[in-house]
Length: 193
Image (cartoon, rainbow, N blue to C red; front, top):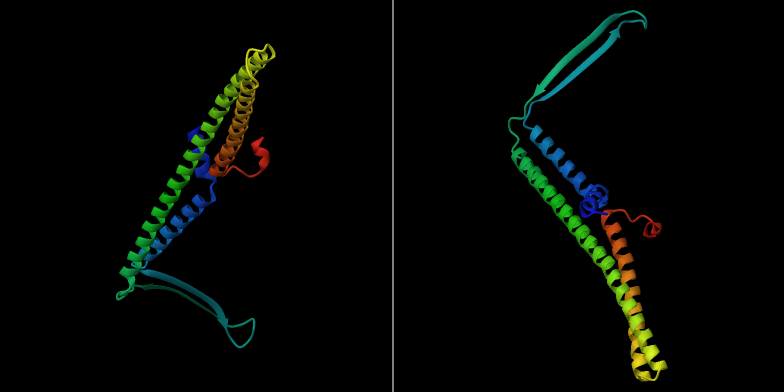
C-alpha cells in the first residue's frame, strides 16, 4: 500500500478522527446557537374551536398570533458567545492534533514495515552466503584443509544468519500489522496472510 493511500485510509477509518470531527461539528453548532441568541425570537400560534350549548352546534372560535421577542438586557450573552467560540477553537485544535497524531502513526508504521521488508531481502542474501561459506568449510574439513573449530564457526554463522532471517520475517509481519492497525484496517488476523 502506498503511503498516501495509507494516510487517506486512516483519515477515513480511524474512530478517534471521527470522534474529533463530531466534536468539532458539535462545537460549531453550539457557537451558532449562542450567536443566534442575539436575533429576535419569533413564535406563532393558532387555535381553532367551537363554543355552544350542544355538541354539534355553536359558533366557531379561532385565533392566530405572532409574537416577536427581543432580549435587550442579557448580560451573559457575550460571555456565552465567547465561551462557545473558545470551545469551537479548542475542538478544531483537538481535531488537528488528532489528525497529526494519526498521520504520524501511519507514516512511522509505513516506514517501519518497509524497512522490515527490505531487511528480509538482506537477511535472505546473508543466509545464502552463510550457507555457501558453511559448504565450503565443510568441504575443506572433509579434505583435511581446515579445523573442526573453523567448521563450527561456519555452522554458527549459518544458524545466526537464519535466525536473523526469521527475525526479519517476524518484524515484517509485525510491521504490516502495525500499519494495518494505524490505518484502521486491522479487523482480523486473516488479513496478515
